[in-house]
Image 1 (cartoon, rainbow, N blue to C red):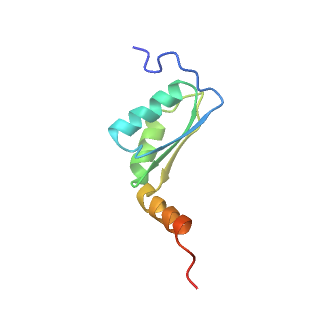
Image 2: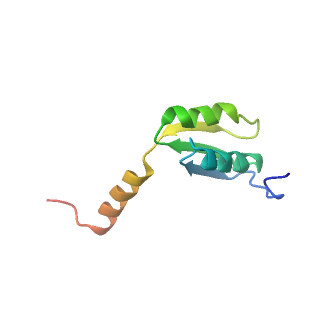
Length: 86
């Protein structure tokens, strides 16, 4: 079964959070199979790196990185909607 359904993502870059898990890891693999360069982010760097190693594809640049998207989002919201502390 062609997981990409014929989608061509060549020249595109994708960032997948939670990529150390099963669902998002397979989502990242599907994006890579479609030709995208993929960065894998997860709270557990080892898990993201494992997926990056397991799904190494010639057409993609895989990176497993530590990231807490939840805390990054909170920090972004604070900076966007609140005046800086004096």
